[in-house]
Length: 343
Length: 180
Image 1: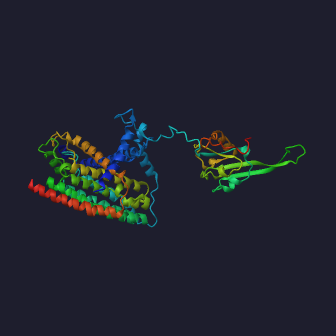
Image 2 (image 1 turned 180 degrees about the horizontal axis):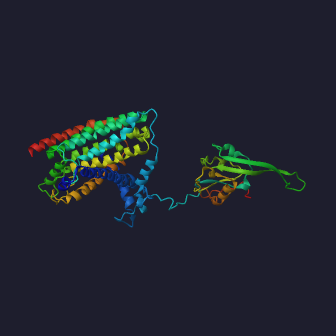
Image 3 (image 1 turned 90 degrees about the horizontal axis):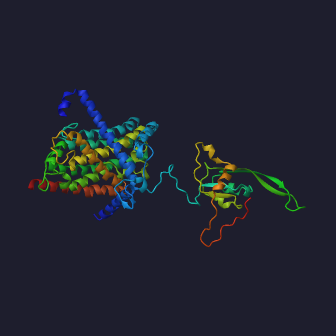
């Protein structure tokens, strides 16, 4: 693939990457919305969900998008127009930027950067700015409260997220996501290299912390204080309608997909298929599908938790982050570091 | 850490509901997904559930019993009943008696766009002229068509179920005014 790409001109490579990025974001978000938000939650409540649009309601999302596009794009009179209008794009941009460092196969990547996971964690914080912009720019008390809650929550949970990743970085000895996948593919566990060494086994505590912090970063339900619909309408999204609301909506689910992909790369071995040579060209085709399967699996966990538990109170939410997850993550780093040196 | 068993139990509840819905037990539990069989709901326009006989669907008018006394219209919380009537002289019941005065009903409309189905009109009617019917499918594309006039309200009478004993051994509800 590298050989093919280097023969193409710049604009061809760029358009391939843009299409790949759009597919990776929109297709994943659409699949998650249909499979989990429409269907799985319905089954959890012993009902069927959408059944009319397309076979088993599979085209329901198209109908929803058509509905949102027809709606009027309302800007509140006292809103800060530019900030209000720009906010959803800032959130969505951070999602697309997260995708940049994700490897989908031995040669199927956008950029292979030694900063890798560091860049991803840094870029994921940008969405906080978008959310704060939305909360402030809407000139609405619900939006402002939602934005402030979101900021407090996202900053609190950014820390355990990052610290959970440090354990993986220590074990893989690199921050490059591609090399983290290779470290898992070439690694050995229990004296056997049959399944490589997926870090979920050695870094199980880190995996749990990462999933909990990810749930909070995505503001999914046990951590949905920022959009608490029973007290804040929909938090920072209250004043949005039509296309801009749709962008927030897509951003929410696309970010769930991309974060799950990062978790899959860090803990589940990414695109690697046990039994194949990590440099096999077949993995350039198979790899993205394998990664997608792992993303669906991890988002299933996220949405399972989302549709099971009630919402945390603000103080419980902060206590979980600062008093439990952060110390646990720090202990995980210490233990990982010691074992790395000793073993 | 004492929370963990409760958290796991919650996940098991939602997870097992998914399994029960997608793979319903038909004799034995098979791995063939059949959510349409497992779901507790029915797909309404295609499948219809019969409402209970005493369901409060729509209010029917027994025209002959109505004396245009206006009690229902006055008790209606959102004033959705419109009644007009006039008085007429009817021939005396017995030879040599005075002619009687009777109320003739000209108009009896219920605006179901306003009605909130509280049933107070049915309760206050002293002449057994208003009844609950379990029919519920009377939506209209135009809101003005939700105003049901006397003939439409009388048509609903055909759907009113027979009175049943409220409990075993109790006396069936007696109609105070014989139906006309």
